[in-house]
Image (cartoon, rainbow, N blue to C red; front, side, top):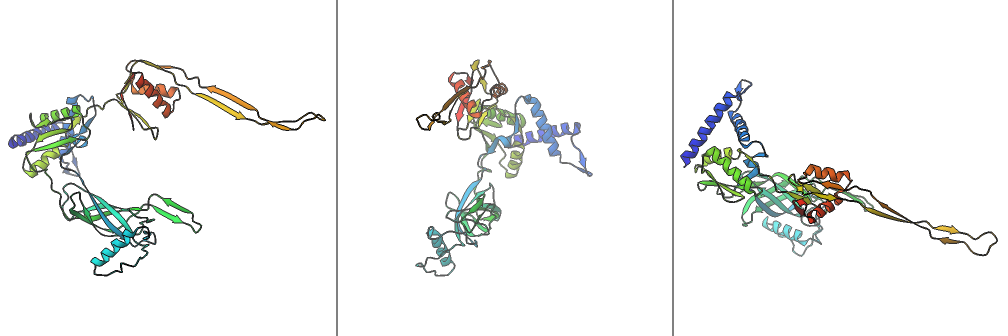
Length: 404
């Protein structure tokens, strides 16, 4: 099986290389030949696009799916930031900061007085988070994010002390330490007025942690690799399977469900890396998304998918405005006549109704026509939501209405 896959790969590269050379795709730059791999990939993409007819959106496999087991792992740790300019934790309200400092000093050979309650305004308790990339090896550096967990005003100018970073299994996978970069700041005047820009209680340390332990991965195990689609879709899974089988031979790929596609791969690690590198650059026509209308009830944002259509329907949208104003009027008696001056209320009521014409949706109306018709009557986003809801209740909206 492995020999068959390697033979299919070499045969395909030979055929595409010949086509690329015959088409004049291999050029020279500065007297040196440009890598033929880019020309081969371009030719392969053009051939795949011609085979698929160009009716849909063509994307690379690496943009559509990820290799099962090749992912990041989240790390977390608890530490102390020191060197702040009086913007640290108020330890009367965050006693764990003092406790952490005492534990650290004890490990360093000091014996702090547990009965003392120092005001550590230059120290802050923080949580440190990081993402461990796949295939990270001991000795590599990764970025860390440092967030205050007490009542520190700012972490600007602080230094994170040595902090172990642990995974979900409780094992230590990295050690973080370094000077923070804080994008926000705050300032306070003598009268109590203050201003804050961005979030000064969160900082970042580029390359602030060193990987100490490798995460085991099953990438090189077995004779298959599994591709998991970023968005489950049976059409995309089928087209991905067909593209792999057309390139590497029938039976190489098998769709397990609407998310996973299993692909036979070489067992040799070096050959498997080359195989996956070519696999993830295959062009595949993505399946069209389902017809959906997304409504954000908090912001008023409305997103209408390109496949949304409506059945024949007539829509009339207008608004009634009632304005009531009070204009007090002073009433005085005639000269030399008995009576007194009084204030008499005068009410003015005005009723206005917009004269918006009724517009008609024909069968199979597209997204452009829906938006154009709604804009012609001057409907706001909230009015558009009301119109779409009414169309759905009438059974004319051929789409799923999702409210987030």
